[in-house]
Length: 267
Length: 180
Image (tube, rainbow over all chains, first blue to last red; front, side, top):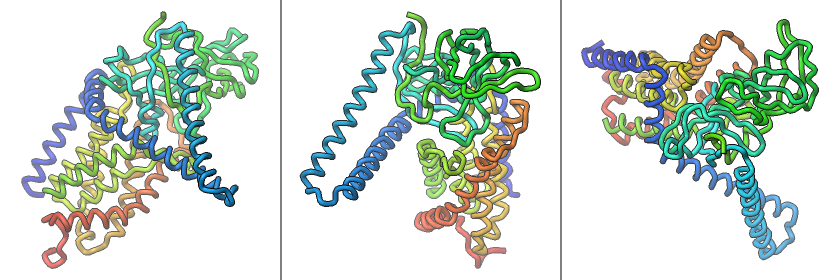
């Protein structure tokens, strides 16, 4: 090994040792700084992905139309394509109208945000949103939709934040089961092969009368999540050696999130 | 040096692209990883100091994008991916004599194995931090799947990068005549 290789090794080792000594706050700052730098790339990438998806969906529709109506004239095709575009716009308008209505009737102060990236790593269930410090977002703020709980913010940069989804094993939420006095902790699975994973509600009593379909709400214990946010509904219940465990279907379709709200406080 | 800069840019772009590639639901949600293939090509086409620099850059990007800060603790400390990339890239660099002899297939297979090794190491660290080691079928697919995909991608990626290296006259390209 020559001298330059040894110098390179020493430099890498020294910087590595410096990074490994970072605590949570230093790591958060470094990560936030990095996200600040790459946020234009992420925003452009997100826009590009939407365009590509839109084009591919359009092509698929045309293929279907061609198969089903191969005797239609070009003019008819154009009209149907226009209709499809209008339907897309209508869907978008309805979605935004629903979000706006939820924001107005909610008891919380909500900051609307759009998903920029989702599930970028294998072992952590996270999404990034296009809101950050400049929008008064801070770490550990709940993130919701009109359907229920999505997760909480972790690292917050100026214009972008990471949201840890409720389906991640590390996102633990104190919850109660509708119609019972049962309380437990909801968390996701470590590894899941499904796009829409189920959640586990642990630490219920073994005698819990938890019925299929019962709604599960945040209990407000722990301080991060306010009480009364819908988390999901019970799919099954089983008694384990020390406690009872319910499997929960999340209220929110986490795989197809588009718009979310960050809860910044109560009104 | 030009080729090294190109590899840095490609690594950055590949890392951004990876974020937008959805997981493969038919492969138990396995992700596609492009960056390791680029880094491991760099490991056989660059001198050792530049290999370390490239590994450092790739590890830094991965950590900056994926490290989880949960309240007062960090799940896997910032820097572990740098260490993983550096160790694996050094192993690949050690196999450079085979590359010089034109035996690319070993490096293609190794790219896949090393990609899976990165994921396996991450998973083991998470298991250690969370206190239970569970290997389900999904976990194996999510560790092995990206490795298989990297192995399949590697020949084409290596060929493109090798062409790029020739076009930029990378001075460290293998020359069987001068190999000792």
